[in-house]
Structures are given as C-alpha cells and as structure tokens.
Length: 155
Image 1 (cartoon, rainbow, N blue to C red):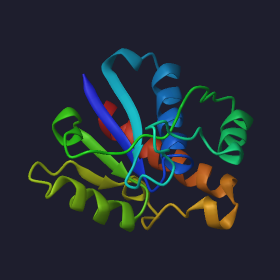
Image 2: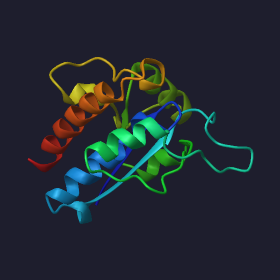
Image 3: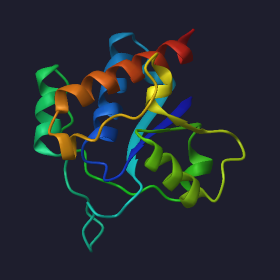
Image 4: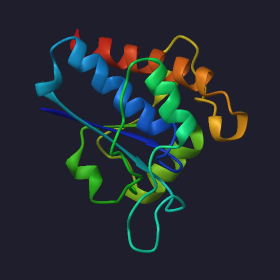
C-alpha cells in the first residue's frame, strides 16, 4: 500500500483539497485500496489548545463541492517527525512547506519530500487561496498536480 501525505501551512485549504481530489481520482479509477491518503499542516495555527483542529475552510469546502467532492469530517492535524516513517511520500504545496517539512523531519534521507507543482509542466508553488481568495485557481493547480502524481504512480 502506498501512503501519501499532502502538506500545507494550516491544513484547512490546499492540503485537504489535494487529499480529497486525489482520493476522488483513486476512487474513480478503482484504485482506492492500494493507497492511504491524508493531509496535514506544518503549523499548529488551526489546531486548538485541546488538540482539535479546525474544519476545512468554507470556501475550500465549497470549491470541492462544486466539483462533486465531499470533505465532510476533515479537521486540521499537524505533521510530526514520526510521520516520516509512516508515509512513502510527502507533497508540499509551496516552497515554504518544503522548508518546514525538512525542519520538522530533521532531513529527508529517503527523498520522500516533493512539491505539488513539480508534477505539472508549470512548476512553482500552489498559490495560497487564504490570501488571494482564488480557490478556483488553487483547485486547478492542485488538480493538475494530483493528475501528474496519479499518472506517475499508476504507470
């Protein structure tokens, strides 16, 4: 079983969008059983003092719903050092996420850390819709990255 963790800053916009877009691709192609897919944050900003994370940000949830994807029940969780041994691949949404993953893990000896847009022909970062309010653009970038990742993993 291939274990994939999508990662962004707060785990309420981009990484949960990636998690559910990728899960949807797997399900549509009858491949869900071969993968475990999750998402997490490099910060604890969206996680309360009692450890309960905030739900997916409403505009991100609405954008997913617009494409027929449900993310009900998803709450923000923080990436931990221990996650490195539990997952095969960590996909960050931007360069800052990549730096923060290296900091959290201490290093990346097995080469598990990648950037989402590296799975597209465009490269660069997935723009953070928290600041731009362009969840449609974030969806497009994440979908394209997930499609490239899907194609690579299922060839």
